[in-house]
Image 1 (cartoon, rainbow, N blue to C red):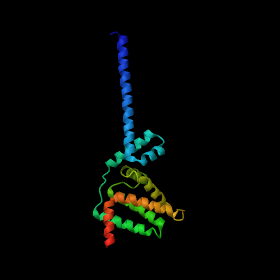
Image 2: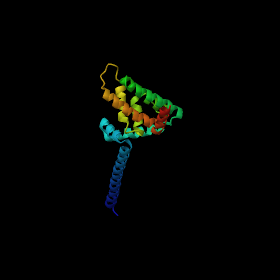
Image 3: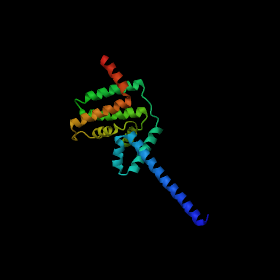
Image 4: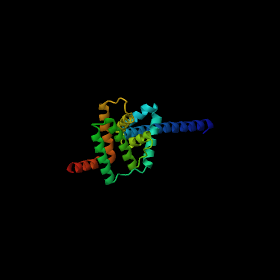
Length: 192
């Protein structure tokens, strides 16, 4: 073989590897996207819209997964569950007379449960990001609850918004505590 032929063969091999690598990277990105969409559900779209760049948003979601996997998330003890559920029922009962105060208490109680499970809660946005890994369908509602909870007395908040926030907060609360255990404690309280 002469040098021209060798050069053409080498160039063809390099191009073939380049195309194969590009195809492989494309397939990998599509699989990663599907995996992240499946894991994060509506939160995936929220983050893509918020970041405005799909690649950066996916990097953020992958970083969330990595961060939460490094945390020592643990189940609650039976005593903690009972205490938290009791506190939740008191908070819900308070809603009738003081809806905003009840929403604020619910927000603090959810943070307390998260802390007890091992989530860092000093920064709300980080906490919401961490929650999005395990509860992607509930994180938007958690953000809504928190936005209402940080309003001050005198700011206008429609009671219906607060009622919805409490319902959404309850869904997250039950999932954090474990809804089966919440039902058991609720049954105990009915008997008492």
